Amino acid sequence: MEQNSGSIKKIVLAYSGGLDTSVMLYWLKEKYQCPVMAMVADVGQSEDLEAIEKKAYETGADQVVISDLRESFIRDFVFPAMQAHALYEGEYLLGTALARPVIAVEQINQARDWGSNAVAHGATGKGNDQVRFELTFQALAPELKILAPWRMWKFQGRSDLIEYAQSKGISVTSSEEKPYSIDQNIMHTSYEGGVLEDPWQSPPEDIFLRTVSPQQAPDSVTQVEIEFEEGLPVRLNNEQMGPVEILQQLNRLAGANGVGRVDLVENRMVGMKSRGVYETPGLTVLYKAHSALESLTLDRQVQRLKAELALQISELIYYGFWFAPEMQLLLQLVKNSQEHVTGKVRMDLYKGNCTVLGRSSPYSLYDPSYATFEADQVYQQSDAEGFIRLQGLRLKIASLLRGRPVSAVPGAQEPYGESEKDEKALGRSV
Image (spheres, rainbow, N blue to C red):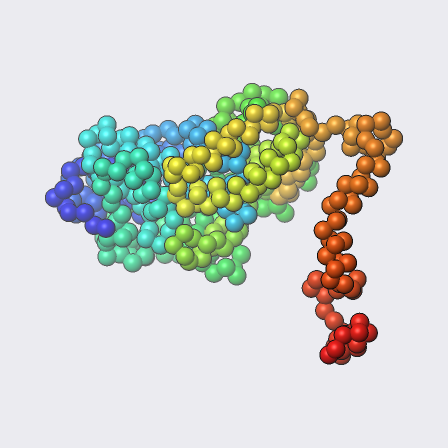
């Protein structure tokens, strides 16, 4: 909803230097005639931040702030999502969704420090990011006015933005020929728009920025060993690393082996379907390694409960509810489950695949003396007879009382013309 122009004193814009926010910076200055800060969030997007700062000033920014949010992004958002095994619709690792709340939090901090009463974002009125930004603003800083230019201005699409930018002398990297929307951070790169809007078309190989094609990956295997402490990765190949470094190194190793590409049609929060192509090399490996370690260290029912909660957590992240009370409760539950998720996992990276080779933990619940197929002294196989009899008691009673024939397999199709004969054979009227 558009705010009264006279009530806007200062604006903090989440600025990337791309087409949308470059036009937005100029447009906000024109419309509100007030100071605008371009807040550049460094979430590991591997861009020339000095060039972005220079461009922001050239486009009219009164102040530019570059905030290094990489450590907070990984430590406070990415790793908790990994511990929860959050996968939206079973595939998407939520790289964009996880980055939005950390950026919004920094916008709030900068707005308060600068004396601003308004924040602005570059999300469109069709997408999910508008919700993620604005729910964070509402949860943590309800006093701030929220400006969403895509829901306010006359432009209908990126072609209009390109034309406007050219008329105002604003330098942009997007073009009519290749109007991809690219979002990148230390966790992932996502691609939307252009030819990708046709879900039948394969993504052009030249769009990928951090993974090689699996077909072009090396013919030799790359082996990695990841060590976790209480569910958090702390060492890679026996070398201790912080969150930023460990993800950077895994991105490099996994990307070189073609690991981490996903192409999916997802359901946006607003109700429409959208095709997105994602590269998430390092975190793909971490998710699989963490899952392998949990299989060794978590109780069965805890694993089952976590799997049930993962769907809910992934949807809350996707829908922008990171700071909702139910989300914080669920994250605390996940954190409590990680007390004994400590140990090592060995994996092979090879032509788009990451394969678990082994896992070990001082808190392992796996006991070979129970699991062995050889002779043992700890498990009485005859005990299984009574267990199976009790498990099947309700099935046996139902079958005896209802007279269900053995051939009545759920979902089985009867041959044409045979149903009447079968009914007569069972002594039933037809």
